[in-house]
Every structure is written in structure tokens, then in C-alpha cells.
Image (cartoon, rainbow, N blue to C red; front, side, top):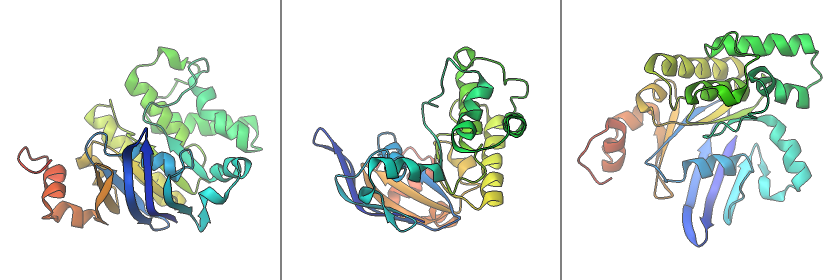
Length: 246
């Protein structure tokens, strides 16, 4: 469903991603791990067509994103749901309006159906009754949960990208979020790439894992293979060891 072929990206001549070869099967929940500034968020934006590679290709369901016009790319992104690391909420809108935004833009649902879906998503992320609050007045953790609710509100999204879905959340809410995302993925059959620093909880829901280090994909395998890996960098990062090459 998602394939990167020797994808590379640099900013001001500084390489961020280098010759990344990655294949994510259809219906897979894929976890992307690695130290800070490894290129994880840039890879997600590349998959969504928000950033195009300087070299190589990004192929989504057989379509090379570089072959699309800007209008075609915008239409293609209707197939995506995405949670950005900084949430990307509209602070001047209410929580409910933020979550309903993609439904009102991209569907012909009735207002009654939209409101029911919004309330359902808020309940799922433990924010019932928040629909009329302004996002500007929310805490960081609450904004993150609203972002998760909005990313998952399009029930027909074929590809969903989550950038740190549990950042700033307490352990109980964090676990609830990961279980929600797994349930959503299993129900919809979507292909998901998830970036998270909360490895223990993320690895409890993923099918496969990739590790980026200094812009290179140094590991790609099943979650169990990642947990059992003897590759020094993977072993140190997954197990949280102080001593090692990182």
C-alpha cells in the first residue's frame, strides 16, 4: 500500500532522509521509531505528499505521488487521515467544529450524523462534553486527544498517519489511545503508520516496526523481531538501555 524507493530529502543541503527503502503492506499497523531528529515526521509528510523527495519515489497504492498535479494530489489526500505532531488544530473553532471539519468538507453527511460522529469520537478519547469548548483554552494533552479524534473521524480513510498520538498524556489515557487506534485500524482495515516515543505501549499494538537513525532506515521487521533484535542500535533503543552505540 505504501512504498518508498530510495527516497531522500535534504533541507539547506543537510540530509534528513537518505535512500529509504520501505514497504508497508495493505492493512498493516506500522510503528516508526528512532531518536529525535531521525527524520520520522518528514517521512510521514512525504507519505502524505506534503513533502516530495529530492530523489527516489513515494508510491501509494500504485500511484507515484510525484506524477500528480497539485489538484490531483489534493484529491488524492482525501484517502488519508493524519495527526500532526503539533496537532494543527484551529484555535478559533470549537472542539466539535475541529473534529467535524473534514466531515463537512469531504462528505455529504447530514448535520445530525456529523454531530453523532463527533460525540462518539470525543467519548472514545475521554473528552465527553468538550464539543463546545474552544481549542485555545485546552491543555496540551487535551489538544492531542482532539487531534486523535479528528484524525480518526473519517471512517473511510484508507491510510492514517499518527505523529506522536500519546505525547503529553498520562499512562492510563495513553494506553486507552493506543487501544482505540488499534481498534479503529482493525475495524476499518486501514493502513497505518504511527510514530511514537512511548515504545512499550506502541509496540503492544503494531504489526511491523521500522527504525530510523540519522535519516537511514536501519531496521524493518515484525514487532516481535524488533523486540528480540540483537542489532546493537535497535536493541538499545527498544529496551531503553543507557549503554550502546546511540
